[in-house]
Length: 324
Image 1 (cartoon, rainbow, N blue to C red):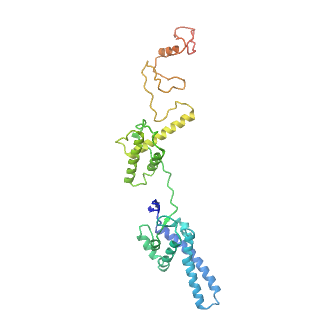
Image 2: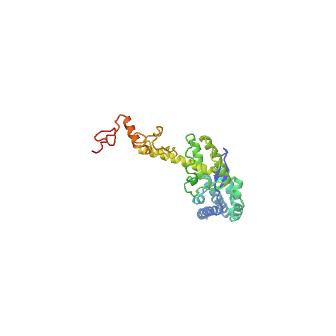
Image 3: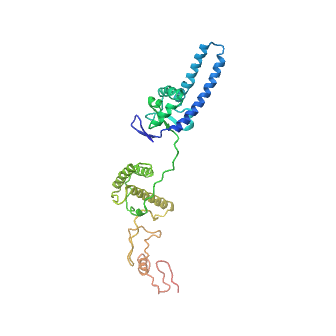
């Protein structure tokens, strides 16, 4: 990738075209140009057979200049740097700042191309392209242009890498409500492009983003956790919470477990349930550790009569009639 800086100080990452692709595009352009030149020459010779030698020679030179020099210049100017060969190979001529070329750029490329391509049979252009770091020939250097690849192979869609298994559950108590959406987007992009970045640059970006996330959550990042692993764990925790909320909304059960929510406190046998814990779908907290006598006493205190298991025929608050 080559970094080009536009006039607005925006850095563009473009992939310069190398010698094989440029040679193939040039071969296609030369074949098309030669076909047109031969056709024009035959027509000119047939139409100037009655003229004198000087006039025929002048017409032949004019045809050479118009077809072999003016033709490529006109095509690159009108197509903004995409001739037939470059269009077939997915290439394009752009300025040094990444903008489209104009007539002066195409004129400089075409004029120098007569010497380094036509007169030297492409030898000078091949040597200059091999020596240049961005594959530019002499005409590109003088015109201030660059041939880049327009069709870049599409990579696989980036996915956020999962956190390490030993980080599972360690960030369940974080308050993620204060993290802005812009920071979430930056974290996801950093994690998805981590394998494409320079290792030192990736670590620096991950450390800065981890510090920003920790500042918005109000809890410092664990010292023994790498920044990239911490960011992956935080993103995974948020995705789990969002999935839990979506399932709760879809099922219509208010008490649907949400990832990251605090777990239910342990209840000792015979103790009263914690009223602060969310009630079950039955309307009151469920405590499987409460003694049955105590449970029946609670039912009686809510408006029913306490039912003795040995008393027959008496109706309790639960509506259950013991067998005779």
